[in-house]
Picture 1 (cartoon, rainbow, N blue to C red):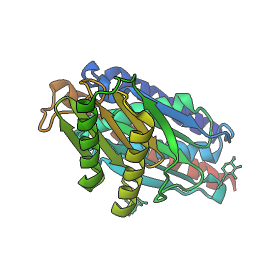
Picture 2: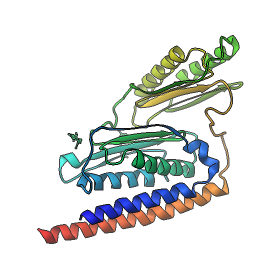
Picture 3: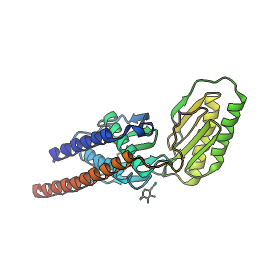
Picture 4: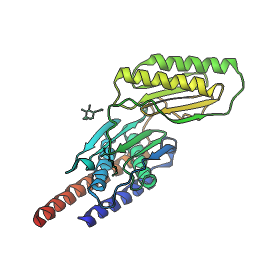
Length: 284
Ligand SMILES: *[C@@H]1O[C@H](CO)[C@@H](O)[C@H](O)[C@H]1NC(C)=O
Ligand SMILES: *[C@@H]1O[C@H](CO)[C@@H](O)[C@H](O)[C@H]1NC(C)=O
């Protein structure tokens, strides 16, 4: 049983690194690191929790090939083995880019949070989080990351545009909001488990804090537990995709590779679970 779990983790890690290698550099702005964090509590190696966590992470990567948000709860034979997890892709990403981003995030969080019960990681284009306590459907407005760019001094025109863009975002409604005026760009997004009202509340809080804390900074990032708001007064910082942007050949190839690998991993996990059950039952 122990070897089975170890083998599965090893395989997952191997496939995740393979995926990272196959990711074309054109999507590097989507895949670059924003923040990550892990819980203090750790699980024992080769435990049922580790097995459940691996199947959760596989489910996240798998699901990101067809949906930009999903949540999973992996039930264990005992209550302390339950794992909760979700991912959210940025609203402008195509499905291949979402899948690529989540695969990268899962591979990175595995390295960052080796053997901790919970972990979270935000890349430019997607967010993943898992824990052994449920956080699904719970609004969370605690500040996770605040980053203000260098102050541009008092430039009434730029700051006026910034405020107008942020006001537009606050009034936009919906879980994903983008706006721009001249060089100023703004974006806000909630994790898909919030209701529209909770999302509005969370985004308003993020925008309020952004304006308050970042003053005349040329860019600002405010990531709360379940939503974020960001702005940039110059080009580059946000690197959002243009609407209607076409799939590159590389993106399609990566997508095909990911689908192929995922099918393989899914089959393998089903097979290993089956073997595990068989040995488990024989042993009793
Ligand atoms: C999460 O795991 C830690 C470490 O094993 C444990 O102390 C804690 O009670 C667990 N929480 C829940 C809700 O199971
Ligand atoms: C979690 O996913 C299930 C199935 O996709 C869905 O019905 C449920 O509403 C989701 N829960 C949250 C909190 O998003």
